[in-house]
Image (cartoon, rainbow, N blue to C red; front, side):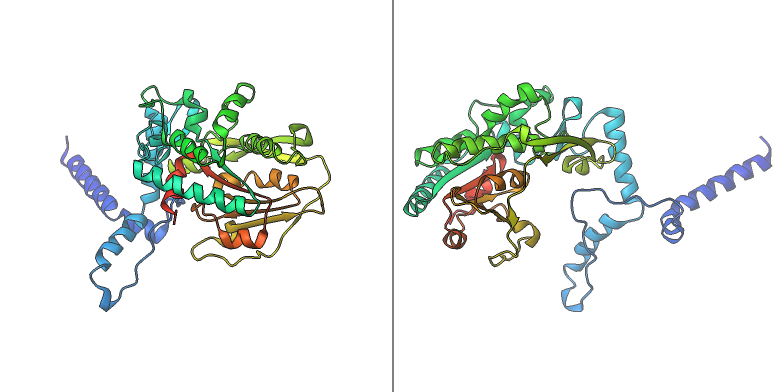
Length: 380
């Protein structure tokens, strides 16, 4: 090899090394590589404010901020997710999301342990639940209110067949079974939606949950609504239940849901959603503004939804729920003279001031089975 060739290769390697060394500064100044937006399903750390009287926590806070915002970070996160998913067929974040058959995604925190019977209720927790629901039964009965505790299933409970072979229950009884048993023993009506959705999937298939999300689909929510109404009709036969024939149901495509976002794959993994277009005359109007004070720390846009219609025969409903309740609003509101929906930040409390103000005929508390721990935590 000629000496000139050696010099060229040396200069080339030096130049390449310098480009790599200063690539972050070059990118920050020129944006030569198009920016990749952050697609993680979380809020990135904010830049801490430097203050002389708060020097001790500043280095750790700034390191956390820098780790979330350094140049090329989003590119690396995205490349890692693409390589893990496309090349190896594995979850880039197995502590958050499980990839099942047909790209069905499953949330790990809380939901996996519930499915695998690993977070059973303790005797102390069972005692707390029993005392709480004895109180709730007496409280609502004393006011002439019919009270229902509704349990929504996770995707694990409805579609275990799509899970990897190594994800299996470790027992026959999980904390959902324990919770339902204790609450029923107190005399409170429990509506367990697991059975209803398991039966429905024989005809509906895998459409009851969004494949890339841990929430049920509009179809799943509608079937959940129907099962709740069936139970309510036993005491209130005047309540009419909407049927599939009351809607023109149109599927439409959407980007991936919250689990796809956790994997940085929401643009690659997409879902079909369902738009229910009512074929009957709308009879309800929204209650605005919210008639109750907003609790501190709760999103005002999520806390309250209210609807009413002119009817002397239909009962009045108060519905305490979590994110699974959002898709039930459009159906439930047309079965009651007044329906108030409260999302109390996963606390599932009685919310006595609202009960006193609304004076409902029926009160429903609805929780996802994996979030029962939040209800227990907030029992006073």
